Length: 201
Image (cartoon, rainbow, N blue to C red; front, side, top):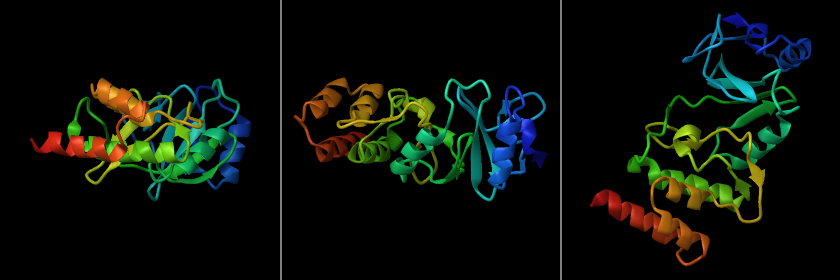
């Protein structure tokens, strides 16, 4: 394992290190396909670095050059989004500790997972979460043998009428179906039945 200060990126911050240690995070694994130079991580985005800390958990550490001053709102929205999202265990200004999903990114136009993904997206709508990046699900969806997970709530927001299902349908090329759902001309169960029939044909 590697001392946690080695994962503070791109510049070291004492405040970040102290908050991580106050949450009990002293070490993490150099693990993942993304290199930060001397250590590897699971993911790197504009607001944070995702690092494996063991026991089926990862921590998202806020980048010191992040355009956001805190990860707290993101964590709260991800909490609301569970179980469509990985479970959040703890969070602070500079970190989110969450469930590690040992999966792969969704591949484009893979209908095998579409039914499950639509159900997860519908759950987000039911709790009024709009995932702003879901129009590109191959970047924001992880798949395991069992299910899909919608990840990365950095730009998610609370809206009265989210459009997650419509965005996913459009991403898979079902534009008319998505528009009909948006206009309440077709129910969610009808969409699921359509996808089931499509997969079985």
